[in-house]
Image (cartoon, rainbow, N blue to C red):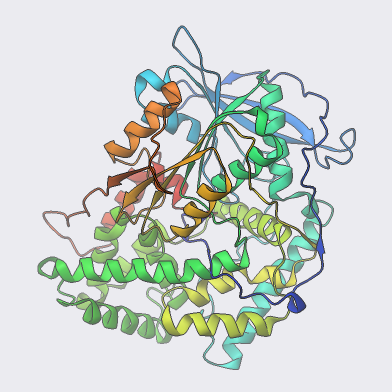
Length: 537
């Protein structure tokens, strides 16, 4: 689950906060396997390699907009492939980065390049842009410039601030309805899952292997429910709690992100010799919130106000590799009044571009359609203030990110029950301190999918843990994709791996934000280009 790199945060949840009396009517979603639709034309592949992924190929596939009317209007999905090179193939490995709203075209290149080479060689690694995303057509962008700084303060301490934020959220929902009214009810997880099966058919494959991060784990779980016999192997990394989609999941995430922000403060205090921001977590946090308050009065560079400041530090809750760059800019602003450093780090990690606007449009379209949300704004206010008292870092920011769902122009579906005893083999990976998809969700899915196994990164706090530098996790992943072998422990957790060490500050700390831009550029094509994005969740 995730925001675009512009905001590396997406929401996840406290059970039991929604009163049925305060939500919109729900339209039941089918639980039975869908009727087979006509197979699409085989995918035609053309070269589209990049310097980083030279063997990448691209194609398109036409799918029904409305699966209840498969002979009606069609839309186009963009797909990508890195072909197998081994003499014997294990078939297609369909990959998804999460979101909702994340583009997966180059993720195929990343996975093929990052897997154990002997294993990668056995698969056609297939990426895709889900309906409405990226190079798929049509691609949605409900309201260009929606995140243009400086936005109202996210914490509504006055009626005027509350009203300004409400006006923005309502305007986004209205813009989506006006621009894409005929499409919105077809932008949802169930339709995306049916698209995945159309990709399988377009590949001419009887079954597929699947590898999903973040929201991609929910796609995988729903696919396995609707098409259990079409799954050969399935990897779910950083798992959405299917019992909380989506309002409750977002609230649970507020607490988890606050905890990761506190972990960042502990790390900064540990390295006070580099950053000079205090030797205790409390002192560092006090300075962070003081900086936030100062930015309300005078946004840095006329760009970074309190909401943008939160956006900037959100990615640090996804991936601690960003901590040195965030700490540099934080220290430069607090100690040297260097506003440019803060602007630079915002542009590197927090700003939303056109791709991010597309991702956010799909994020809202999917989550608002997938499940019921409170339609009475007082419910949001009550719940968010309650969370804010314990977890002030991101509660209101996250609430406003999702607030268009309170005013969304489509009715809600009923989430699929992903309980499953028919799928043959699933392997789950999860870090215990993951903020974007908190740990309890992994145990929920482990219980619900009978033939699943769970590998846990103990004390790990990053989101998307495989292919990110942990050799222990990657060995379990490679063994599974190579042979189907999985650990089988006596309890809910089948195997554990120690977390990778926390980062160290650079040898020469610049206390200037320019290093963040370099880090962001260097990060292009790495795992965290994908999983640090709440277009995922």
